[in-house]
Structures are given as C-alpha cells and as structure tokens.
Amino acid sequence: MQRYSVFALAREAFRDHRGWERAWTSPEPRAAYDVVIVGAGGHGLATAYYLGKNFGITNVAVIEKGWLGGGNTGRNTTIIRSNYLQDPSAAIYEKARSLYETLSQELNYNVMFSPRGLLMLAQTHHEVRGYLRTVHANLLQGVATEWIEPAKVKELVPILNIDGPRYPVLGALYQARGGTARHDAVAWGYARACSAMGMHIVQQCEVKGVRSEGGRVTGVETTKGFIGCGKLGIVVAGHSGQVAEMAGFRLPIEAVALQALVSEPIKPCLDVVVMANTVHGYISQSDKGEMVIGGGTDGFNNFTQRGSFHHIEETLRALVETFPMLSRLKMLRQWGGIVDMTGDRSPILSKTPLGNCFINCGWGTGGFKAIPGSGWAMAELMAKGEPGPLAAEFGLDRFREGRFIDESVAAGVAH
Image 1 (cartoon, rainbow, N blue to C red):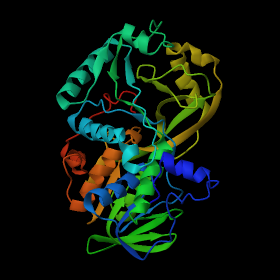
Image 2 (tube, rainbow, N blue to C red; image 1 turned 45 degrees about the vertical axis):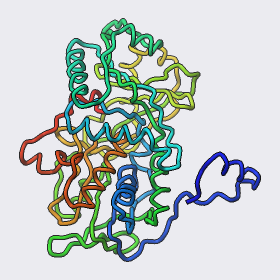
Image 3 (cartoon, one colour; image 1 turned 135 degrees about the horizontal axis):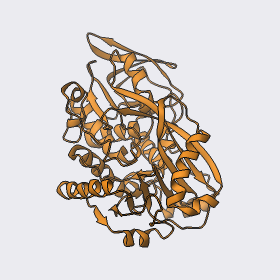
C-alpha cells in the first residue's frame, strides 16, 4: 500500500501527480473465500478490516450491490458520541469513539475526525432529570460527559436562543470529545486498508440467494455468479430483513427512511454539534460552511432514499425557534437513508439460526458513530463463533427472552 505523507505529496507534485496508486482494487470475485461479508458500507468494511488486523483472516470478500459506501454510510450526518444510558450501549459506542480518535493514523487516511464537542439540549424539566441520570450512568461507565447550565450553553453556541419562548434551554448534556468525521473518508480508509491486506471488494454484485447444506451456510448466489464461503456476515443496514429471509430466518426489525438536508454555505458560526430532542432536530456546521440539519425518521415503513417537503417543513419549523438565524438560509440539498429499527432501538450483533451465518443490523439512526466499535465486535464474533464482551448483550435471543436494551429515550432524537 502506497503510504500517504507530506513527502509523498511533494514527490507527486513534481511528477504531475501521475504516480498515485488506486486506493483499492476492484477485482472479479473468486469461486470461494473463507469469509464473505455482504455490504460494503462502513460497518461491513470495518468488520473485514478487524478480521484481518485482529485475527489474521484475510481471505475475505466484501460484496456490494451498488458502490462502496453508497448506502447509509454516504447519507448520514456524521455525528459521533457515546453518551448512552445503558451499559452495553455505552461500552460499544465508547469503543467506537475511542477508535475514531486515532483512526486516521491507523489507516494512514484522513477521516477528518473532529472532536468539537456535542450538546444535547434539555428544554423540559423531564429532559433535565433524564440527562442528569445519563451523566451519573456515564460516570459509572467511564464515559466522560457532564451537565452544563444555560449560560455555558449560550457561551458555546452564541447563535442559540436559550429563552424560548415555548421551549427555553434549561441546560445540556455535554460530551466534549464527541463530534463528527467525514463519512465517505471512513469507508474509503477502511476499504484501502482491506485491499492492502489482499481482501477483495466486489462492487455491483447483488446477492440473490443464500445457499446452505446441513444447516450451515455454503455461499451466496449473486449477479456475478455463486461465491462459496466458510462464514457469511450480513451487514446491509436497511435491507437486513430481505437478506435474512434469503438465509431462512426473520428479524425483529422494520425499515424506515431518515431524512436530512444542508443549507447553503455560510461563514463559521457553530463549532459544536447540537441535538434538541424536544423540538426534534439536530444541527452542526460542515467544514465547507453548510449547516447540516436533520430530524427523526418517517412515521411509516418505506425504502425511499429521497427527501420530502413536509418532513423538511416539520424539522425546520421546530429548529427555527431555537436557532432563529436558520430562517434566513436557503436549502442546498436534501436526501434520505434507509435505517433498520429494532423495538428497543439497540443493534443486533449475533449468530443466526443458519450455521456460520452472522448478522450485524438494527443500528437505526445512529450507525455511523458506531462503525469502528461495530466492526471490532462483529469481527470477534465471526472469528471466534461466539460474541465477545462488546457484542454479548446484542444477540437475537434477547427479543425471545425479554432482555431489551432500551435506548428509545436515551438516544435523544435517536441519533
């Protein structure tokens, strides 16, 4: 793998930048692999990377029906945080956040991680009590968060209207090491590292069926032919239910669209991420100056990847009260992503009824922040055949046994 550095940049400048190698190869699939991972988004690529890095398993194919990172990885709003309430959630998200801290150096690829800080506004007394509870839980979990008063919130976010009128800001849950990263770069960095280990990333290769024998997976039928495998990982976010059905089992999830938008670029005015559950929205400013804005999911099951006017109106009508300056901005573009939601709003990392078939899904609207931790835990599950500490509580059996990991409230606006 060609190493990126200031010296490499200077060298290529003298050669008209003609010496750069492709970041990853795009080979035709072999007949069989030790491991096949369906889904070349952030979670699938991270799983492949940690299979190679942590367990030396490199005879791996990551297959993708579209293009690398073209699903939810390229459609999210890049928020990174770990201030969840339940212990299993806090553990896996904090693992991910800590891995993000050094991911650029590890992958030799700038993922543009920006620990700019994250605020979750409390605009009702109920939220004040809830967030104070989360601060205490995070203290016990070793997750660095704190409660801050309205004056401090205003100091961090001068453009914020803390006086209401309907929903005054009563304080905020603050995670100083939360922030953002560049979504595409995370996928590209993992893909480059996987390719350097000899793994195959096969794009435009849609799975049409899952083949098994004696209760164990043997491979997948694809638009590029049959690909055999010893182990299969299903990491396809909003389409998890369809691929699981091909493998012969059902999942307790539903797919809905999550919409977001960005404004025209403006001068820097917001250097933290702000989430507001009561008015149901969240906002940050990109490096290009765009205000990145999003809200909740659609209220009905669907698989659309485009936005809708009524949802934008609903989100902005609420946010304009808290951020009056938004009323003067023009929208630049909007989009949607397909997210898979479980009943307890927590993910599934699990063995399945089909032998040697594993699934990673159910991240809902908060999958981007979890990518490194999710990949780490899924790689351990696939390599050992049993979940490690990070994935142990997220098995499919919890729904049968009633061991829910309820993050429906602690997730704020579910991001």
